[in-house]
Length: 613
Image (cartoon, rainbow, N blue to C red; front, top):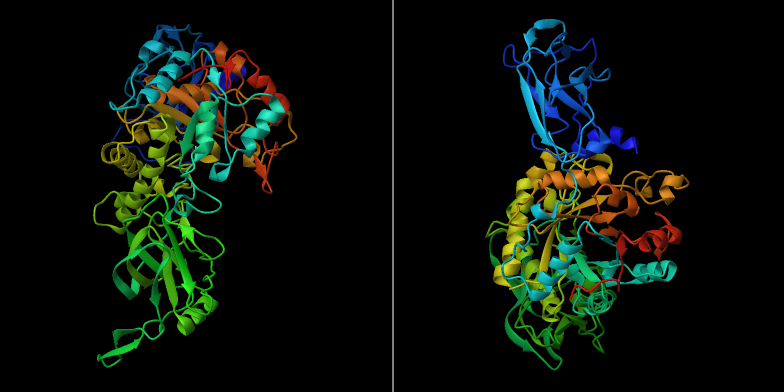
């Protein structure tokens, strides 16, 4: 396994590279001082003795090495060299190390100097680290961070703790809208069902509808009843911009029940000001334009039966058909509602309304207002949107109003799962920082890691203290760098919400042959399971070995025997569902043979192999 010697410094602890050569110009900083910018083994880090790593220290200037000034690791000589591709980097080849040992690297004053300036000597540098990498149960936090956690959540967490380092749980992600085609496919092809089944509250605003309804917890309950642990994430959709009311069609309080109807006719008028500032009355639909939105605000919703409807007042009251409205795809014949609902107009709808008016109907709610707005902003979760996580937690902002409504709706759905006494591995705000090089991937990483931390804490506070959701085991994602590799320990620690805010720490890894990044699907390594020991150590160093570490998303599966050899068994792994042209299957990652081999390993637990209840 000598290859680990070469991948550890870059993959485990990160290298900061600055292109320099003999012709580079540079300025001395702080007078004659030489400042260390980065080092691949941070102070206090844990590494693996078996990997015998090299170490890189980057200075703020081009460096030279003094003769006769020994650099030592616990008294043993260390070999030094300047990186030929980057003259600011000092490469240290460390002597052979042993497991579970404390080490001190000593670089005496004057051992390093600015290139071509031997008189500009670097000060002494001492770095302490150890070779304790691996799982040590004594270091782990033993309790969930929510003191009011449900008994079921506590039992699952305790099982995961007890099993951690002994075996790893298999897992895979279900498809959208809580479909189970991929899970069923894996089961049929490998003969085993994964121990952890992934779900997602994506498209929350559309639920309930004929294609998505998170009020039906059957898939989650089935997974739990059959012996798997549900893991839920949230691709959180938000508007791209604030919605503005352009005019009021009607306001009041009308109970809509037993298919009552609020009739809004074309002869209704509203007062506006003309070009000279005089107040005049015009038909209420006179300035309605294609692309604008009909918004219905509601209250007192009976969630067990509430339905809304928007119909033309033309003969037979046909449904107004259009795209983009909340809750129903192909028209506005009665659809379930849980909140305000809306319809984006097109030219035919506008013409129909101006000619005939329309009806607000349904049952199980009270309508308080009907308005024309400047459009129902498109929903998205990508970071090229302008939605600000900083403003989202500030009371009085439109962003705060949006997320409060979303969290309230989410809490209602989570409570259904809690009432069924089902615990959840809960992973919101995942992959927040994106790849650092090109910016955040999702809106919750738009502003800064501090803003994301604030949103994490806000979400926890709302769910637990306001809505009493206590069945969640909170899983936080470390960050990545360009190309899907993990960021440095320092970057990950800066983003970490804190030991009191996180129960489990996960990494999402799509690298080294995971074809998601366009690598050659015909190469052998793309069809084989993968080792992730170095990344495992990085995540552990991020949280100083206090939290259980899991592979929250992956492409290629893990090599359990290698992980076991290095005491690096992740708590569980979760392969993302594999889909091409709408069909589940082995399109991107490996096939049934690898799944079967991994899931039949004695180091892997599948559905039915354990009892966490």
